[in-house]
Image (cartoon, rainbow, N blue to C red; front, side, top):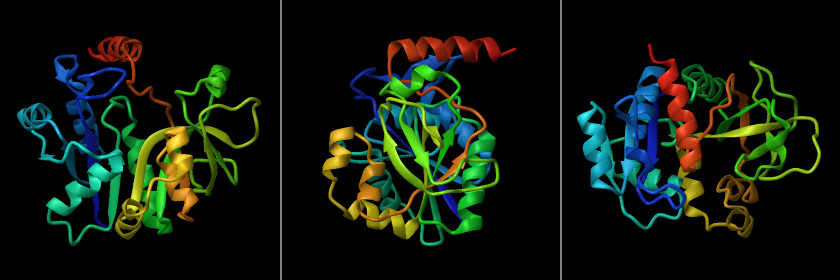
Length: 245
């Protein structure tokens, strides 16, 4: 099966405008993510964006990027436009990788792709074990509940996604912002209207679940922080600069 990795990105993020082009170790966040995706070596990698500045940056750093409209409601809608603009007739799986997670583990990206190929499910994602109890009550960390407890080899179905949870329950994990779609499932997903659940919780995966699309979950080895705020950026910058020899 052939996989295409698409990274949606835009400069107009509400909480941290311009974040894709913020630099860590002399390289923009979006180009760090792009290079991680290339390193995973699961298929061609493409950045989908509404901003020419992002395209210029990605191309300058050896990547491929495509210009999309600026009125998309979600990153998935942006990805679908990019697919329609490229020659992808032989692509089976579409990997949606978030442009603000430069610490995403390469092995985890490969594992999700392998699980999708092996199990032939409609839609897959990743989740990590929760080590910090504060995460349960923090709405910036999305949680997922699965039918079975996750291990490195299984790929159980998600039963719900929530932003806050009052008490610790079995099979609750930190959801990571990465999705792998069967091409036909993605086409189906973008044809559906946003569900009230999705809008209320600001979680587009609820549109899939509300319309009977099953989401399966693979275990991630690590739980990377996404960059949503200035504080996140400072924390990740310190971490990545410290790791660099």
